[in-house]
Length: 488
Image (cartoon, rainbow, N blue to C red):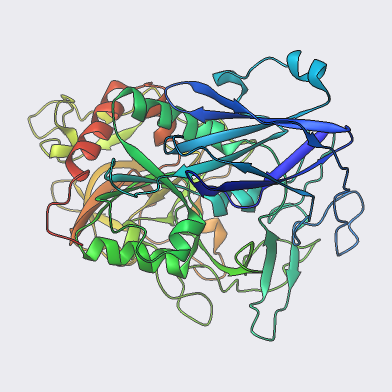
């Protein structure tokens, strides 16, 4: 048995990566791989002495479950990252046992990214932006929120969603659900959303560098060398500093592509030397809600929320979209986005039509599970020609151009239909007003912000399941990888 976690999920080439491991073996080693067009073996560490440490018990006495709220404080081990390791996302595979065990354990390939006894980390360049103008943000806060700290033989079910820990706060510490980022749990979301998209980016020749949410939170100058920021997959948890830094980047002419959804739904507060965070959410603790309304929801006005609608940055919100309930990622309709403004540069080379030529209105991604598993939308109304136009009533910039619509109507809770994002906030919006829809589009306010409005855009693109989704993605990257205006 072996499991581990990294001290910090990013490291600059040439510096030290620290990981923490618990094992019942007398020794172990770590194999390192880089995610690219394929999973590439990079190195194997020397042997380390094995030490077993138990998981900390749940502070509320929940039998059989570990604590998600405190650092697990397992023994640390250092590995110097070579100077010549290229920027990218890396996989650490922990191998327990002696040399014979290591020799009998085959190297991983692309099918072995997901699993336990694994952890990921990012290698950042010593000179940021020198070789790439695109920065890919891995949504690490969201990863930690959903990390159950399970292993193959132990279902610990400890996260913000499974047996969470809530504390009232005080003495300068915010109240809310508490979560440590120093816990094990293996690799799941990276394999689903990021790995196929990263492989596609490299196959297509895009030069990309990488950062984590914590990097963006801590460094107000992180985005300065870049022209385009990518948000990919499920990007639900954001700190105020993250939002401030991205908003300033856009005002200065920087571009953002949100190939993601459920984006910026909850605010987090970093604590414990930035190794943990607190978020006042509406997650059950036992059979009760510890605090309602949950004040770290971004869009509601204070005191019932933050009062900064995510739409002002992303152009869309989960409250106008929704999710498919049931097992993740769930089954769902495959109708795709109804195309609008087919003459826009986003659709160049696709051949898609919006019906303005008298032909049938086409759907982007039809036949694929493009919409969901969670999706966001802008508040809109139809004009006389039947075109959906953003109203701005929800904070979406009025300059937003809606390029694709998937209407969520009727809203119901059957497994095979979308469950409106409205269910997250019934105390704040007792009635659903206006159409609910996933919307794809963009706006310009200094820089340009594109939003795909769906978590699984990088899955469809990365696996090249739809040629037009691939072409739209290339159009966005090719257009926004250089600022249109002078910036820092």
